[in-house]
Image (cartoon, rainbow, N blue to C red; front, side, top):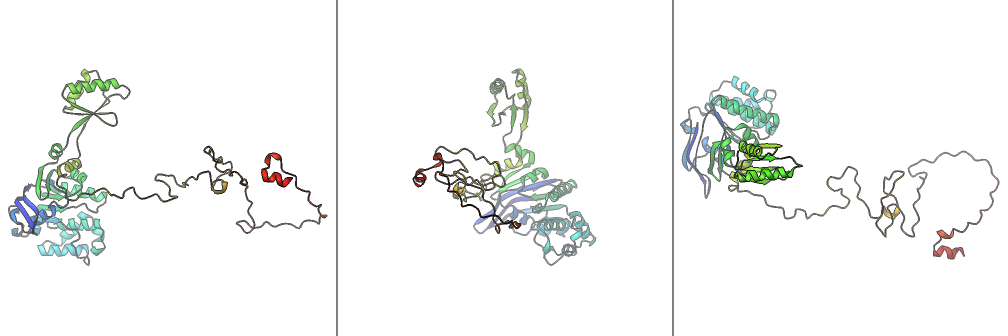
Amino acid sequence: MIEAVGLTKRYGAKTAVYNLSFQVRPGAVTGFLGPNGSGKSTTMRMILGLDEPTAGHVTVGGYPFRRLPNAPRQVGALLDAKAVHGGRSARQHLLCLAQLSGIPARRVDEVLGVVGLQSVARKRSKGFSLGMGQRLGIAAALLGDPQVLLFDEPVNGLDPEGILWVRNLMKQLASEGRTVFVSSHLMSEMALTADHLIVIGRGQLLADMSVKDFISYNSADFARVRTPDGEPDQREKLTAALSEAGGQVLPEQDGALRVTGLPLPRISDLAHEADVRLWELSPHQASLEEAYMRMTQGAVDYRSTVDQRAGLQEAVPGMAPQGAPYGYAPPTAGGAPGGYPPAGAMPGYNPPPAPPGQPAQGQPAPGQAPWQPQQPQAGQGMPAAPQAAAPAQPPAAPPAPAAAPAAADMNKRDSEDAR
């Protein structure tokens, strides 16, 4: 068991931990929670004798850590997974720790198998990923088969399979009667792993209770009630009945009702008495994350602010808007330049109608020649087609003078030139 009494630690003018008292009992996984800078790492260092308390004391099994006989055989800890000599292999690192504590060498191979590093046991640790380093640190903590274990962010860098493995390992160690103390910022993982919580903020104790009680005390539980969507009178009758019984009823955005102050059986009875059909009647309990945020909102030292330049950057011309389909091309007023059809238009393209006073998309502007498809020329993407020698023909007659254009197609200058 770990017991802290009046634990205080100051670094000059800054007080990292102040008058902190708690107990970590065996047989359960105890989560250690708190915002950044709240004093969690300092507290764990004082438990392990790495920092000397300014006031108060902390004991492990009734003794200060420095007075424990052969402490590595009684306490295992993972505080910094990077605290490994990069030139040593995983097996060499564990073997050195084992020899210092009088642990048999066969135990090294056992813990390497427990953490799944058998295949890389002889590789240098400097090439390990963050998750592999975490596994090696856990192996070092398990090396002496201790009764007390401390882990600081043990799932950092692990993949989902590794996180599940650590969760099951913590529960297994606690089921064997060991004392397991785990610090983490992953609320969802703590909700699945921890049985008890110790929460601190700015170096002071905020909560010391079970996970269930912590969520219940720091959240507002309510019931979700839904009546048939097409019958608003049913909803009104139920709202009136619940309000008369002392419940508080608030509408939800999806059409359901949020009811507080009444247990679920009472809500069901009131609905039956009012002859109201229910489509939904379910309890809602806040998550550990919601309860934690509610508890520690006044103890957070580092808060982000709104970016004052957010939304001021102009959109890049021609850039597709967010969510635009692949191949998006920005539209142009009045069609493509020069009245030509849009790029990539297929045969039979029909331009959309144009606003009043503007030419239709793909149509020439007033006074502009209509667009005609151009035939590819030799040397411009198509080879010249071979031509057979034509037989001799008599001289062609001189071309006839061009006929005057129809009156309907003439403009003013064309009429004058024709005359």
